[in-house]
Image (cartoon, rainbow, N blue to C red; front, side):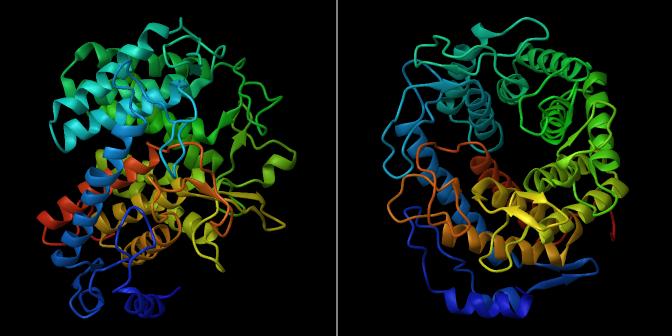
Length: 444
């Protein structure tokens, strides 16, 4: 959809509301403010403060008045600590009391970030602390991974999990450390992340994804992605040489090896020596993971104040978003299963759409990028009109191409909350600058 068409679309929708339980308005921002009164600078177009303020108000309302109260009522275990995400998104009805290591780390991150970045409400920090206390007694030895599933009381239901159990817990501990000032949690985050990286770096490492089965020591895109973002958040607190090593290796692997030179999209799985396998996997491009990894690379470029890295990641981000877009029904696909044949996995994940939003915001905020502005507005409208349903306690997290048949049995509390919080933080910074780009990198 081009800019002219999109503005026309906004005019048709400007007084409407989503038939959604969230109650979020479907772009109630006056369209005349989006066009005639938009500020301009040498780098491109930006939104006026009045519109930024209204976007911020909508996101604050969704986070604090809807999402968090639903989490508090249906997901958080106030008695025993942790998160019970097996709940019906429509009603909040609990399906099981099981807890998963991934979701403990992610939930710890969510509530620690809320406390540190938004409101220093003791209940947020306590929810993070009790999750930490629930999961840490299960910490495995070096080179091992946390069990993935537990019953409500902490009894182990599965054997050893995967590398992400450790990394998400490390990310949660890192966020808890900065929120609480607990230096022990920060050191635990460093130790867990570094031990996981050393395990991943070994030629005998195994990973159970379909693409990686049979490969000795596979190099996998989502591994670099989570290593990168976990290490970046630690580096925002302490100058750790181990975490610098991880970010350097991750950025190089993504941009120099996983990026396919023939079609400029990211391949999912490489051999241990960073070579594309000579089988059907060489034709798979992970657009969803690519979009997420590339905004994280832009985020790291902002931390480093590296304009070349930012521009390189931004160009690849735009390509992945453009290629992943569903030109008929809107939104974005996550996996191009055969590049040459243009075959796609046609499911739509809320997380993929929300990762597009975060990347577009980085382009808006730091480069005044007109493409980023258009992408943000269009993607936000698509999310609100498709993934928010009337009367539902939570947003839809996964669905078919049309978002008509969708998953209902798990509450998504990580990608969704990150999208809401990162948007709020970006709005605050842009409002403080009267809508202007940061000029961190000058004119890109």
